[in-house]
Length: 244
Image 1: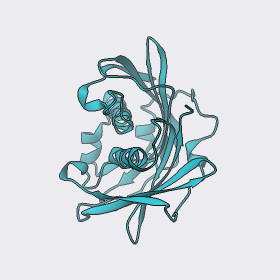
Image 2: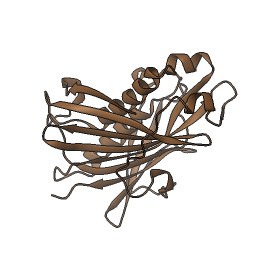
Image 3: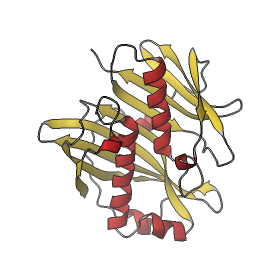
Image 4: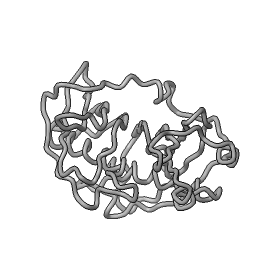
């Protein structure tokens, strides 16, 4: 079963060029995943009462173009199935002008009281009508993330109250905002937008943290990135710019 929603790109979705931000794209994807779960009766409030949540482990987004302020788009998501403690989900943004972006994510089913991942219960997985359609040839779950890097360049990040969600840690979509800022402030000197971004979320950033850092290292034309501090790599990622 595919879930669709019509959406108009708003002022708070865009960057200084009036184009959709990557952070906003990730947020829209997350909201569509929650909408799907809510429609089948297992939304975030229901799961939270049971002491469990879904959290995003890996995400890939590929852009064909960036929509602009006021543009009408269609957001689509569907479940591609479950395996053990993992759920596999696809995303699509398009308009009357064609494809805008595709996405693929791996979600983990997590018991936040016992602080451990769980096998997805059959009574939950059977509620989803599975669609096998996918865009990427390679699974994001099979992507070999870069791990810890020695950055060529890095930035300090001060954490804000608004970065934290109901789970008490920095929301995963905010990580994409950190990387977007890193890219445009330290890499993008010729207005090249991001074509493809992959991220693996390794550790949560809790409320006690006041700041972290982001950094990149260029390897064969691809930017390997970390969100980190002195002791922990919270996420590792890969960015590929669009061709000019």
